[in-house]
Amino acid sequence: MTQGNAKAVNNMDKFMNYYVTGALVILICLLAFCGQVKADTTQSNVSGSNTSIDGGYESTTTTTYETGSESTSTTNNTTNSDIKSAPPTAGAPSYNTMTQDVCAVGVSAGIQTFGIGLSGGKHVIDENCERLKLARILNDFGMKVAAVAILCQDERVFESMIQAGTPCPIDGRIGKEAQALWSKYDHERPDYDLYVKRMKARKDKEEKIARDAALIEKKRLESELKMTKELEEQDKETAKEELKNLKKVR
Picture 1 (cartoon, helix red, strand yellow):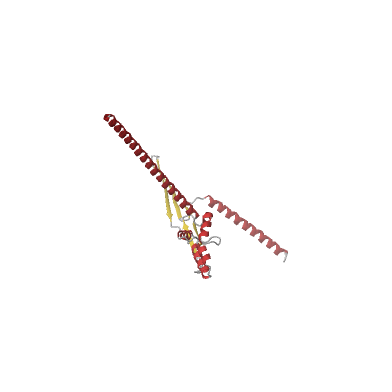
Picture 2 (picture 1 turned 90 degrees about the vertical axis):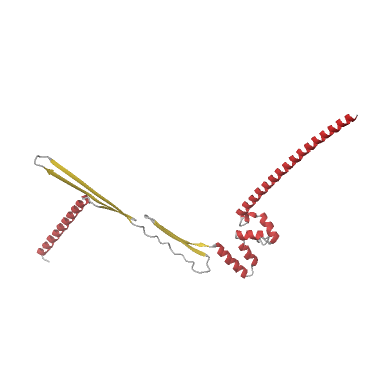
């Protein structure tokens, strides 16, 4: 490259630099100028709500008459519009039990508002279903006492066995031995809370019966005492009459 060509290239680079710098300065000035300009229309968006404020128009008219007087009229116009739309629907997830031999139930729920939406789900174990399946399998294996024992974990089955006079197995004991152990360790009963409530109700009932019986006995004793006093008074009156009669005879 010759010296003349190199100088021409340098001059071209300087020109391009000046051109780019000038364009940037102009662009910055335009942005600054636009940032100071206020729009007559404002828009605010919220989930489920669309609010538009239009207006801000101001009109001023001045009229000068020949006499030198002036008439000025100013008009302000502001228009507000508020548009609300329905929120989107929250979709609850789907939970399947996968197989028929699983004692699990899928539960899901969802809620949606204008601001936020939530949804969720989970599997819930059906303990009664598990208990029935386990008891059926144990019974098929010939473990009948074990099958009854696992069913007795349900407080309804336990109560029905007690009412039938065949208490549930405990510590390898059945029959009267099991009944004695359940009476000794009653806190291990699956229906302990209901059992305590029932025992308290029975105790209150027995105390009420005892109070009523004591009141009846007290009234009976008072009645007998009153009757005894009346008989004693009658005996005294009879003795007095007999004594008067004897005196008259003499």
